[in-house]
Amino acid sequence: MSIRTTESRPVRVLLIALALGFMALFLVMPLAAVFTEALRKGWDAYWEALKEPDAWSAIRLTLITAAVAVPLNLVFGVAAAWAVAKFDFKGKSFLITLIDLPFSVSPVVAGLIYVLVFGAQGWLGPWLAEHDIRIVFAVPGIILATIFVTFPFIARELIPLMQAQGNDEEQAAQVLGASGWQTFWYVTLPNIKWGLIYGVILCNARAMGEFGAVSVVSGHIRGQTNTMPLHVEILYNEYQSVAAFAVASLLALLALVTLAIKSVVEWQQSREREATASLPPEKPMARAVPGHATSPV
Amino acid sequence: MTTATLPAGAAPASAARPRRRVLPGFHLTLGYTLFYLGLIVLIPLSALLFKTFTLTWPQFWEAVTGPRVMASYRLTFGASLIAALVNVVAGLLVAWVLVRYSFPGKKIVDALVDLPFALPTAVAGISLTALLAGNGWIGQYLEPLGIQLAFQPAGVVIALIFIGLPFVVRTVQPVLEDAEKELEEAAMCLGATRWQTFTKVIFPTIAPALLTGFAMAFARAVGEYGSVIFIAGNVPMVSEITPLIIIGKLEQYDYAGATAVATVMLGISFILLLVIDALQGWQRRRSGDLA
Image 1 (cartoon, rainbow over the protein chains, first blue to last red):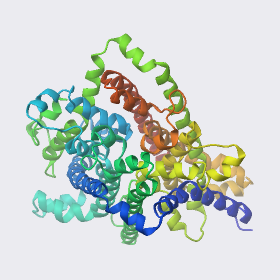
Image 2 (image 1 turned 90 degrees about the vertical axis):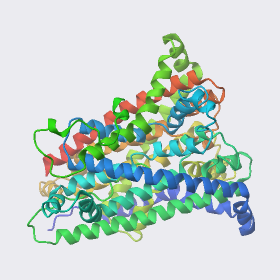
Image 3 (image 1 turned 90 degrees about the horizontal axis):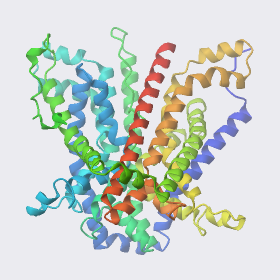
Image 4 (image 1 turned 30 degrees about the horizontal axis):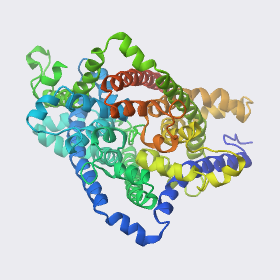
């Protein structure tokens, strides 16, 4: 008699049905509702809602915000991962905790802290007013709040990956006479490429979709300081349901594209891992965790 | 805070270190990391604490324990707790099915688990509201039964279940994948039933991961704003979450009050962050012991 380490068929079918039922109810239906609500009055109404100038300026602002926030956090993420993963120093685990901090701060609190620094009654408020610089309730505040909420994404993806890969290859490159930049470009970067892409797309999804933090610092000036999620809120509160869901459907598409790229990246990573696993076990490679899966977007 | 004023690369001289580092770039990258961390995270967060310290203790206490604020804590923490508990059960079920069984479309289901990470919270909020409102796909069947979920505290719980699901699935999934089948086989050989094997062998292995996932889902739920405000109804004392209290105080230019409540929220986030760190350490040691 062989040992059975799985459940009987009826139990299996029941568990699969329960899991899929739960996901259909909580994940698939909300997603489907976005598109059906957006198309409730047909394609013409849908296009009309998207062609509106305020919708366009919201889309533009969202793209600008992500275009500034993501590269800045990318540079930070690579620098932080290099320092943390390649070297030992005192207070390293505390530094990692601090890098994680923005993940656990409520988005509303994240927005508030920038109001306290740059707002009219804030630390720099009087100085900024004197020099006629607007940060809060203007575009720079929106970008800053977005940088804060997406701060850990790329660093959090790269640190475990680079730690698992160790320093051997970089040290070999150094011994062979490569400069620091050459070592990074030709040795490290190819190794962390998939983790990097993974971090960037998750960071981008959150940057484009952030609501709470941006809502506090935006000031909600139509056509000027409204990002797409804020525009969705305004339309929704004005009972323009079709228009709200039309803009929301673009964000839902962004989410679907993000998930698709993420799946491709994970698939590539596991393929490369299998390729290295099939090599002779001369140097046992530490298993690189594909996309630190618990980072919240 | 002094770290923030250090220019990139101006960390303490390397002469103080006994041994030359092999790889370059330590001072540059660590210096930049501390500079950017200080600028974006630490200085603005310290502004919150400084603002709080300008309040006297009675002012602070009154701001954070007013009846409306207390009601919001009850709702925020109560709903987050219920949602995280539901997520532990549902997340374990989904992770189990994804790791142990095969069925058509499994890869798509696996990818879909991350939807709450990728879908902007405001979109999730209006979409869940549309589903559960009286004329929505789900709401229309519940209304004749006298059940109303939207614009009620129950709606808050539903939005938080949506937000928290991936945390539990994604922490439990890798542990289940790594769990050694030999242990289960041994248990079966020794005459354990499948249920005994699950409760006595499998469950203890995944318990730390489940607890970590629970804490992460709970921490995220406590701070959540976007998906909740559309579905909550936002009635003071009944369905008003704590982040909304902060927004409300800000809109009335009550900066001190908003800051006081925000400081309480920040303190709780920080405690939860430390708890999650400790849980993850426990989990790593646990899987290290088994390996």
